[in-house]
Length: 102
Image (cartoon, rainbow, N blue to C red):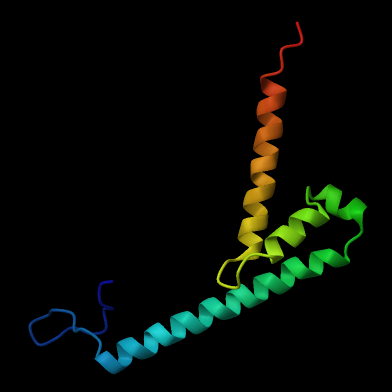
């Protein structure tokens, strides 16, 4: 990882942040990441309150939601769920385009 540009030094070169500042930035980045993961996990969990008709409209099944929520806490379940749905849609498009009806 490079260093953060803060202000120009005496010779116009950027200064490296102090070790303390670098540690604080690293801790803040981890904290922000965990809050984002927690927020996204809650959003996926809220999908369980939708009925099956609504889930079908957005292309998600209850099994998809359970699968995404079973991922470790270090994994973003919303990204996993979106990737899974996109792979399913891509497979359906491929099947439609490569079906020979002659």
